[in-house]
Picture (cartoon, rainbow, N blue to C red):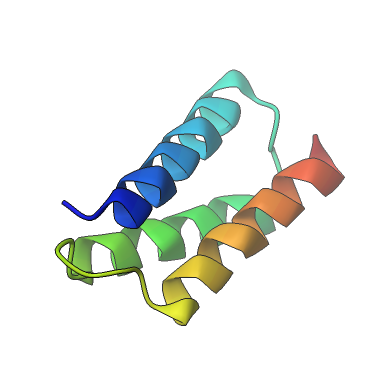
Length: 68
């Protein structure tokens, strides 16, 4: 697995923890996180993440900051 992809996966795990802890309770955050999960499943782990995948994770992070 690519190190950059591993870092992105760790960031998504932190977002999952925030969602399960009730920090990010907005529907928009949950939807953004779901989109990031789907994109990660389809991503190529041997290469650097695509800019679209990065943008999805950044959007979820921004939403958890505004709702948390």
